[in-house]
Length: 380
Ligand code: UD1
Ligand code: UDP
Image (spheres, rainbow, N blue to C red):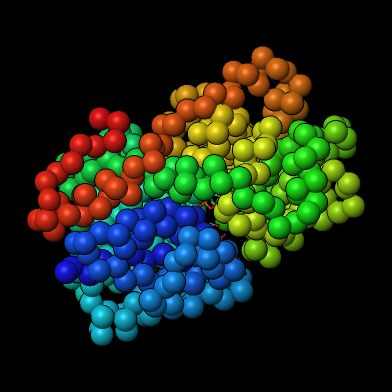
């Protein structure tokens, strides 16, 4: 049986790879060998625990305040040693993290075909998001099979000259993960969050971590949140803080002592999706959250100037607002106060998937390895 090696290292990759790992493990056609880099530690382990994933190999590369070069070199070095003894028939990498691109490069150097999940996203600006736009373009150059989540991402790949035979539109596996998790209404481990859920108070759910927003922009986000909290005492701001100390040092000082701001540790995925379903408005610079919140009908304000995920923008449930402090305050306030505006954004749309992306991924893999026919694509 061909052995397939999913390689991942961060929280969002783990969430989006989990449905694929489950489908590979159930398949009679493949051996699944899970390798994690450990680019994230706690945030990765949290996801693997929820989905019952026990890695076969763990490169454990995390360093506090790690550089991009360290992630790249430690991953390639670790995989180089692994592939010398354990060479899979194909690797699967997901998205645009440095783990993902390093995994693709290491596999390419060993002559192992690279399957790229969530292929073809493009913001059009090499420096935003940084380094993700470059990472995903590099991976597209060396992948053998490109699994695009949407027709738009497929069109981006075609425009760059990727052969149409090597692209399959699958939908995004994040919707598979979301749909199998959110309905479980998982209990919060923190009793204060259970009390909040029971209170019915309006929740502004916030996440931030983007490298290009760190520093001044993120300090401005902290100040904007403090102003929003002060102007609406009935509102509760929930901020599950990313583990990155650079993020915490920038955002959290402005929020100290504010009674309607709840700063938590990263929430386990089940708890986070429940919080998303309870939220009134979502304010984020996350990629995955931009894809999930529209499925739940939640308006999303994205603290970036561009996005590689235009589909929900076009559907009207996502708005790009940048990172300017005044603009964040005014856009959030408008959504909280103007019901017509709120209603115009709070539409449940599913441009990113239908929950069957992992199934299509396995079928595309079978086709690549001459074990099955080409399948119908998502949304086409
Ligand atoms: C990484 C990805 C980014 C993705 C994000 C998801 C790259 C270059 N960046 O960014 O594309 O959107 O993950 O969250 O691949 N830390 C811990 N424990 C953890 C996780 C992080 O201590 O479980 C701390 C460490 O100090 C680490 C720092 O956070 O050095 C930053 O982590 P890193 O993976 O380098 O960058 P992210 O901003 O998380
Ligand atoms: N998420 C989570 N717990 C949290 C915050 C986010 O499980 O406290 C999930 C979220 O549902 C989404 C993913 O993490 O699926 C997004 O990860 P992140 O924002 O770190 O990375 P990005 O998607 O921007 O690469």
